[in-house]
Length: 295
Image 1: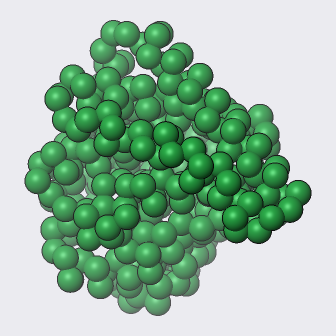
Image 2: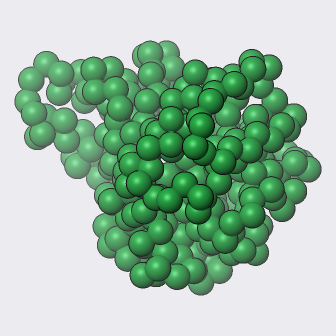
């Protein structure tokens, strides 16, 4: 399931990657939700069953809920329109589902643009977050929505994605509710997705500022619903030695120093976004989008 907005060329590449899956193509369908984009979507994949669904612009979380509302399968796998799943992606998730029925699964995401420092830095940040949340693969706690799979019925029973999270953290919030409902999450590193998000420095700062705002909304909901503790989610920020020197430990040099600088910028942008989100969103989150609950 893919939600897309104004990126037809990237979407075409994602569909081509799905067309290369080593899983029988008559056993899965691809649902693409156009989240109010005006650009024409005309990618052509001859041997895939692809359904295109239109909705008014309401954000990725609402788009995923819309897609699930139209899905006919027992399982749902999510990726994004700037991603390329490896050929074994669906097979790896399917094998995991047979071994651990009823769980939510997340795979491994890798940077598809190793020559772009901001994209590499964002990947390092995700790796740091995954190391913190998923140190025990069988008791994982967080997966990004660009590489996630779960039973469709269970997704609907927990209420799907919260479409009020339009900026970020909708996947974090879903994982929190999933675990609060007593359900398990399992990390499947064999399910690999390449991430091809090309980021400039300004785009990198904007992205992590948005993530900070999303984190503020997430923690407000966490407190409101008396779920996990703050310390359950902030350890990777506090353990600055682990993330600050990670690029240098992997490969010393000028590139490592630049990546370390970007990691410092990440922390500042994220913190400023969090404070902004907390100060200027004191009321309840925006009214739930009707499209986001169309399950």
